[in-house]
Length: 385
Ligand SMILES: *Cc1c(COP(=O)(O)O)cnc(C)c1O
Image (cartoon, rainbow, N blue to C red; front, side):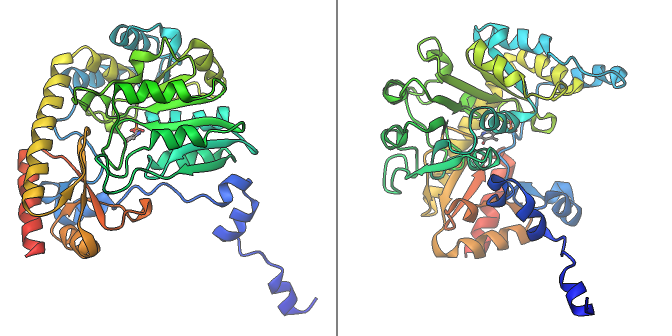
């Protein structure tokens, strides 16, 4: 063999080479975009000077009882956590009025959304979700090797701009559909739908599909017509609801989410769950957090107040703010979006660019506390001047 031929036969062992060896679903996959490198930005600006409004974290933090529970759990770090998470499940069952057999715990609800795809969909199957639906829906579908059926969202001009078009989603469900992912309220749009829309939608779906209702922001939704799917679980046996401790409970760092559904669905998912997927300090903290309803209510009330104030302040500046029932708002910045975003980062204000969602003229802004929102608005005025 000539030297050139020998060289040509040596694989590059680069991403393309390994991707060609991955299972078909992974070949077309793009990794989840977590936004800016916050560790680097904290180092550059110093934590006190950085306004972090890119990841929908809770500026008020967790219940003091959750912090204490983490400290108390430190003497048992050499032990495996309870593989069943039984104490946390009992606390969740009490909180939601369900049986512990209806609950599955996850390393964040992200893990549960992925697991749902893996368990219930595969090659040859379809998974239906909305354009501008939460990014993990596409990841979960492709990781499972299933086909994505992305349904056009409501138009920009609608009362719920870019929100889920439930009629179109229901119409897209076919004989090969195994799963439907719906987020209510949705990230990144902040939009939601009400009680009547929810039950009308569920009534339309054929009984063979499993409907995943991602309710990561449900605790923060205070619109009079908002209704959690947890309240209709009795009537709709094919619904699985996912919730998280990352947002309203202020425990994003511990990575705990949970799913509530029929015991049979939970039992099948248990077959694939890693036995110690939720760690000991996290289990203890979440149980304690559930016991502090006052902290949760206070946190949600402050968020609602700041969400209204921030939305009004942005609208006063001539910006279109999408309606939101979450702790973030999606805002149209038009042709100037990328420049504004870059200029804000240069001033230590981190928002979330939306190009990955096909909303490149918008930025997603987490609702901070009063001080963070004031600093954001000041920086915005400076870079837009
Ligand atoms: C933040 C978020 C989640 C997941 O959060 P975890 O931290 O993984 O529990 C799920 N769905 C939506 C819509 C979210 O915004």
